[in-house]
Image (cartoon, rainbow, N blue to C red; front, top):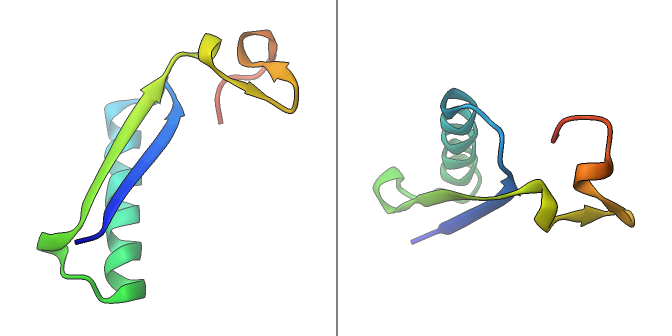
Length: 66
């Protein structure tokens, strides 16, 4: 049973998250042949103030999360 957790900054729409979850599910199904009923994918979101990349605190970046 493949278990896939995606960690990302909060701020995506429900439609964007659904598209991501669907795409990852299909990629797992296609790439390793796992049956769709066995695949579990979920998103864990966190606030910008809990994240730093390349030494830059996310709230100080000018652009929205990508």
